[in-house]
Length: 215
Image (cartoon, rainbow, N blue to C red; front, top):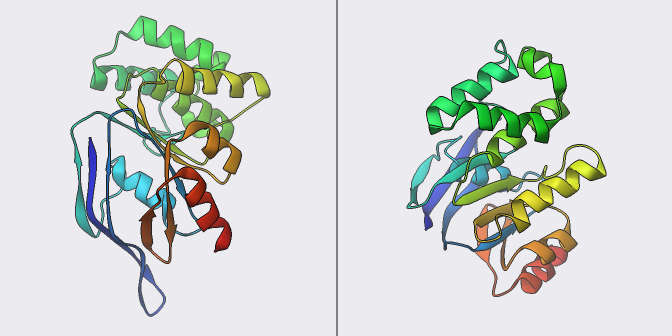
C-alpha cells in the first residue's frame, strides 16, 4: 500500500509562497489503477514526484509498503556526462539487476543503437525519455508512476509501452496523470481530481471526469 498523509507542498512565488497541494490524503491499494486529473499547474506532477521520492513535500509524509518506480519517462536522475550504458550499469548495481540481460532488454526496447554509448547530455528529450522508460520497466516495481508522457516515439513504440505496462504488468498498481479522458477510462479503476490545491477522490472514474469537465 501507498499512503499519502497530509501532503502539503508550496513553492516560492512573487511576494510569498504558492501552495499547490493542501493536506492531500489517500491510500493506494495493491493492484489499484488511479487516474489523477487536473488543469495545467494544478499540482498533479508535483504529487507524483513526491510519491516517487523525487521531491520532498513541505509537510506530510508518504508511507510505502510496496516498491514504487520513479515517474515514468523521468530522466532527471541521469548523470549527463556519462553514457547511457554507464547510467544503465549504475542502475543495475542499485537494483541488483543482471547487467547482460538488462542491457539486452534496454537495447531492444529503447532502440537507441550506438547512441546508447554516447553521453546522455547529447540525447534529445525523446531519446532520454525512451531510455528512462526502458530502464523503468526493466525493473519489476509493485507500483508504476506515469506522469503525462506515456508514449514517446512512433506508433509501434507506443504499442510496446502499452503492452509492457498494462498487459504484462496488469496486476501492478498504477498512478496515472493524463489529459486523455479515454485513456483514463480504459486504464483506471479509480480517479481523483486536483483543483485549487485540494485533492478529491471520486466515487468512480466517470464521476471524476464529470467533475473535471465542470471546472
